[in-house]
Amino acid sequence: MDELSPIEKLVVQAMQELGATEEEKKKTADDIAKKCNRPKSMVTNALVMLGNKGVVKRVVREKASGYYVEASAAPA
Image 1: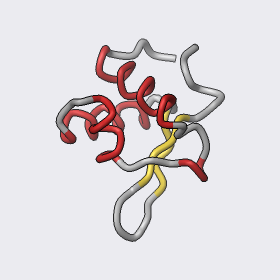
Image 2: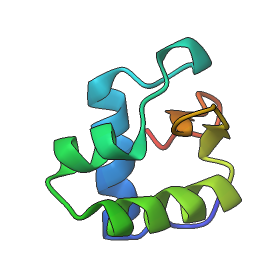
Image 3: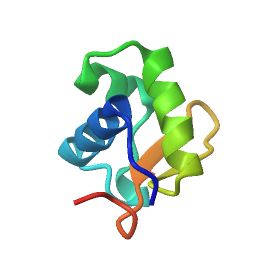
Image 4: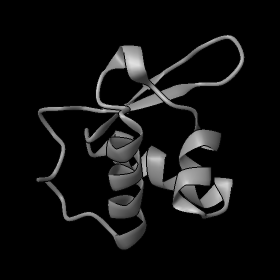
């Protein structure tokens, strides 16, 4: 797995703290941005990169997409 940038690490940690570790517990980019105390655009960019690396899964929904950490790919 590629190394994660500091913001990517922060996003993954926030998602784990929020309990977004499986599809049924997915969180929105807004939820994650509030937990990280970072701008939503920065968090969204990190989520896209994490998705490309296979660390985070995105679930498209009607209103806002949900995200969760892929258990097998999450850094320890």
